[in-house]
Image (cartoon, rainbow, N blue to C red; front, side, top):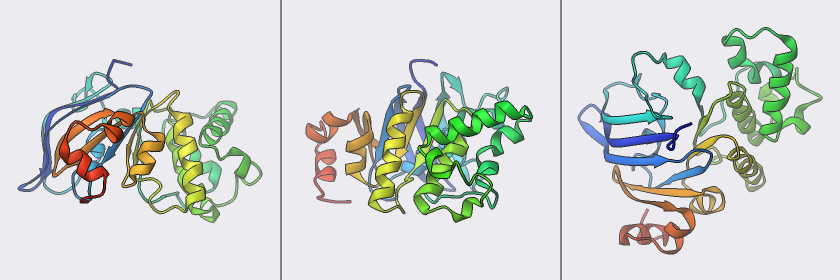
Length: 252
C-alpha cells in the first residue's frame, strides 16, 4: 500500500449544476481510521462515495480533479470497476443484509468471484465474522435468515460481508446512526480492531464517535474541507475558528 490509501486532489464533484464538493484535497493514511464530520448536506457522503465510484450511476453526477486509491487513479480505464470495489468495500447507513442465510450473506462476494474451495470458503466465513465481532453470536445459526438478526448484528454482518472480499479499505457511511448505544459500542469496537489491518474512512454525524474511534478527523462545511488533523488536535486545539464553532455546537 502506498503512503496514502486514499487521496482526493482538488476534487470538484456534484450533480447537475450543483457543486457539492469544492476543491477538496485530502490524504487518508493507511491502516488508520479517518472520520469525516460536518453538518448535514456538507458533502461527507458524496466524498466517501467518490472513492469507490458509487456516485457514477446517479443522475447528473460530475467530477473533476484527482481520485487515487493506493496511488492508482480510481478512473484508470484499465482498472475494472468490480476490482476497485473489491479493494474498497463499503457499508451503508442502513444495514442492508440480503434475504439469504447469514452464511450466504458473508460469502456473497467470494461466490461472485468464483471461489469454490469449500475449506477456503469456510475459513473466509469464520474469519470475516470474527473480525466483525459477530462469530460468537451467530456460529450456531449460520443457516438462519440474516433478516432475523438485530439491527446492530445486521450492521456487523454487512461489515463481515464486506471483509469477506478482503478489501484493503473500508468506507463506512454513518453505520451507527440507527443503532442503540449498546449496539453502537459493539460496532465501534469492531471498527477499532479493523484498523490494525484495514484503512477505514468513516462518515459520522456524531462528533463523540469521531473522538472515540478516529485517528484523524476532517471537517467539511458547504462542500469545502475546512480542516484535517489528528483527532485530538482538531477537537482540542482547532486551527480554524469555523471548526471550533462547529465542534462547540454553535451551529450544525
